[in-house]
Length: 188
Image (cartoon, rainbow, N blue to C red; front, side, top):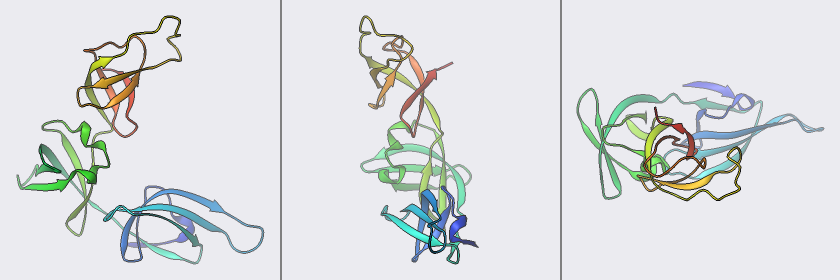
């Protein structure tokens, strides 16, 4: 672990703060007319999911945490748990669905994911940024809509609702951004 100044904290950093492991979501550097500059930091606890806003001054230091990452393969869902297998040792582990932050709908059988571990304990699961999915239901195009700016709702085979261009019909395979839940393009 490395110590960094409070004003050097950046979004995406994993830091140790008040005996917890936190992921930085947003930062805003502020330099008031009086007093020293500070960094307003919005972060989320990776263990229990709490969110907080903290003000760090330049003289404050925090520990920057390095997480170990390991490839796992998704096997199946079991109640509120998801079962993954270590691709090297074939060891299986059960993780709660909420560790994926809603991205669990995009898990596909055999999909390789990246587990971030802290002290041998899984604290987050990274799916591929984009996945292919099939549209099972798409609204009809409304006459007079211009193709360039209007999107219509569609439902994917995993039950997720996304907005797609008017020319996309039911049965079409598309590429979806997992974390934005948005249409990227037609699948090749």
